[in-house]
Amino acid sequence: MISVTAKAATATLPKAAYPRESVEAGALVVGARARVYLEEKGASWRLKLEPARRCSLEQVRALLGALLDEALSHAVRQKVVAFNRALAAPILARALESGFPNMPHDPLEQLEPQVRADREKDVADLREDAKRWL
Amino acid sequence: MALTLRRRLGSSTLLADEHGRWAFEPAALPEDEPDPRELAARSLASWAGPARHLLLLEERGVAMPLERAKAAVDFAFRTPSSGVAFELEPGRGEGAAWAAAAFAMGYAERKAEWSRRAAAFTVRLRAAPTAAQAELLERHRAEARWLADAVGAPLIPISAQRVLLSVGPEARDAAGWVRAIAACGASSALLEPADGVDASFFARFYGEALDAFLGQESLVEERAVAFLSRRRAQLPGYDVLNELAYAPDGSVRSSERGLRLGDTLGDLYHELKDSSIVKACVAAALPDNQPSCQACVYRSHCSVPPSRHWETQGTLWGRVPDSLWCALHMAVLDAVFSRLADERSAFALRRWQA
Image (cartoon, rainbow over the protein chains, first blue to last red):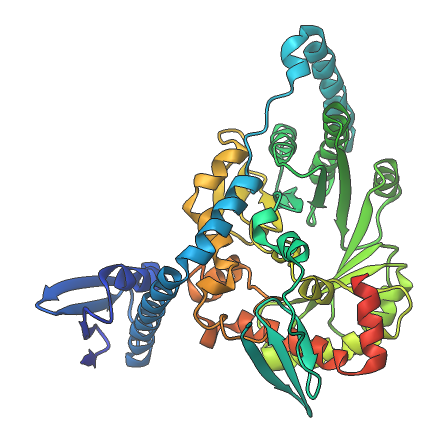
């Protein structure tokens, strides 16, 4: 059930279709444009949305629509992600592992202080050279 | 048995399976299993870090200080790829941005030498470079990428190896722009939807441009090539997988218009894997995680950069049914695949892939 005025919109949402984290994801979409309150009432949520600044009735309706669109989309996506977890999780884990290895520091610089000194001099020269553009 | 997905393109029906193999009816999809080595090579599981590092050398009138440029180059050299590709965006900045460009390229060359890796550079230009800028590009063997807005009559081109053509609602004369791009001496161009352009307008412009590209001997459109490659890490501007961006204030972003992931001075590259934004960006690239993408005929070819969905819909995952970027990608893929139904265009597109 939904009701909308120019000052606020309220909606009663079944918990079974709209888990709390999905409503939170919906609230993220409206961001700073509105304040969102959530009250638990048995098997439902009572959601209230107050726009952060003066809005027309249509704009309040659009804000609520954006929130509910994302909330429902999030809920469906979570189901899909859970259903495909066995397939997708290993790929994601491998991608994060192969894409973000802990690369070692340059061993030569650590072993040879002179190498570090020479390179610092090199970089200082580059810095001076670049300042010609200023 | 792989699931067969269908899409009507004009008078043809495109069939595709979840591995990205496709055919036009009455031909059928291959029944054998796809080559596992090819699948592995295309899989995200074999991803080896961002393909390019975009140095934003000037932003809102602030140029990148040299120390920040050094930190950005150091950060990029902590990525695992054997070659480190930089794209430098001096914006409309003058001396200070170009000082950062000169330093960054010089320093990256030293880093490459010290670490026995390769460094490659592309520098964005909006107008013909000054003599000093041209000399700088030549000294570092940097490619020039001409940034042009497809508004009004095609501009007199500047010499560039690559072109980024921004297509807004005022864009006209697609074929003329492709001729201008060819006149640059460019080998590739990327058509980028600008703010305010709608999918059907972009589709028309892109389709006309694609025909003109296919008529050129040695010029490719990068988005079409990336889609046909079926590798997400090649999709232009795809957050984290394709690019990382570095702002003058030291921020590391998920892409040019992406979200802040960390700081070049305070964070290490490998720590990014613990970022929830990075995890979301990588996970969003898997069609199995996207409800509407699962059943899309282009599921193996396409993925919308999460930062684009964030900008337009306030979510990194996107809501596909009303996503502008999904519509734009569908329009481009429809244009590309409808040309694949034609033997002569298909031959040229296969040459692009090669």
